[in-house]
Image 1 (cartoon, rainbow, N blue to C red):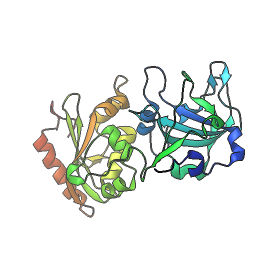
Image 2: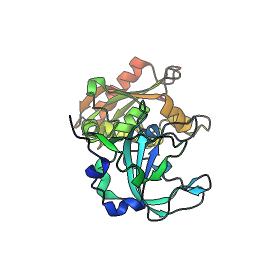
Image 3: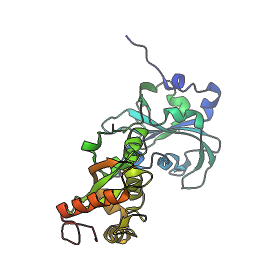
Image 4: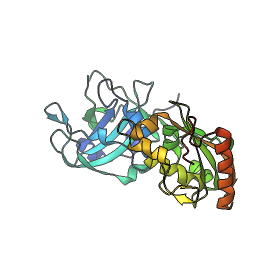
Length: 294
């Protein structure tokens, strides 16, 4: 029978800081709202959303005080008692009914998004912030992932077709960034709400990665070139600027697919020629079926 391994042993938590520490077992962003783990997964991996961990109050009672060390977790979907470590930080300011200011403790970075514990919260109703001393002997480490939670292996160029959130969640991992930035190519953006398609090409210093990264951040690429003129695609930009659509529409409906891979040293004219071929095949130029303007 294997011996249980506890959180305090893996993180080597100094017993002297335990009385001044909190554990936060995040579940949802509110009654009937998105799970905290989904909010974390959807955020930029270089700037993870952990702010929900640091809400200052529970009713009239303060959750934190300045100087507290906070071990923040998010419950995994499909489990009652399994949580992923998402932040270890020090509270620097506690306002009233707002998110606290905090400083991440970098010595724990190697465990963030990778360490999973099992702990029974017990009959604590809606409370989710507790003194660490109450749970320090109950948090069992069940897994330390090799890569960050939610990471999907890059499927190869022939199978590169992703919805917005999958692409955003993975694109900055080395396993994705390297292959996508090593090739030029032609790609398709598919709008699942109406079947429209946009055909584009990538031939810059960062290949397909650079183009798709711009789409994920802004919905269109202001440096994209069509017919020898640099300007963002009119129809994609129109969606972004539409107050009833905007980036939320793109996040919900857009899918990104590689149609053709070309060597990184391919001449720009060669790549654009292949782009024009795919536009004709897909009938996307100024048609009811496409978002291409020319």
